[in-house]
Length: 262
Image (cartoon, rainbow, N blue to C red; front, side, top):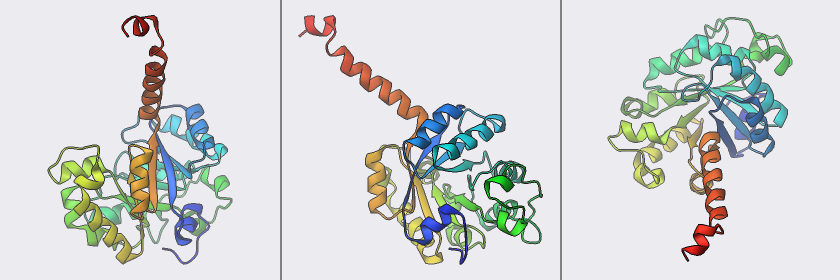
């Protein structure tokens, strides 16, 4: 962890506090704001698998901040221009997918830092107002979160987590399952127990945070008990579908066809 920071995510981890968040995949500032107002610590705008682009990411970041949650972004890839764009738009951190070795970890870090520490181009159009500064050193106070979710990533785990500037590792259980030759399943804490333990141990050894994606509150609670620092509890699209299906099922229990068939 950094010695000095004003970033609320880094401050929380430094204080030993676990963060519980939500994932936004639908292109809607309104839904992003309402989710943020429900009380998660952070909301991540998903530019990798989400159905949205940068033009809607910016208003979603504004909405998440208005709702009281920390706004972060998952980049579509380890692509410096997309990472920089998210930071310039005011994301407090960026999740970088598919980081598989030290070179890729270093490439990610460079996109977060201004010269001489990195290659980030100076143009904090919105970030300067969100962070209240135009100072490059203070604008550098953003969270670099590398996803370790491939077979190569596991083999090169210690090289990745020891890369200067990596603040956290985030685990995508579905890609991690595919990376170790398994299919994604409903019980990743059991099916992936060994690689998950390896990643947690490496992060602890090198003093960085470790996060993970959960499909439900029940799974998230298991992860919280395991000591993860950053736990995504729900995703907007699946949450919406499950809520609609559940309420329809309850409503139809009292329908004429249900009563007649009883």
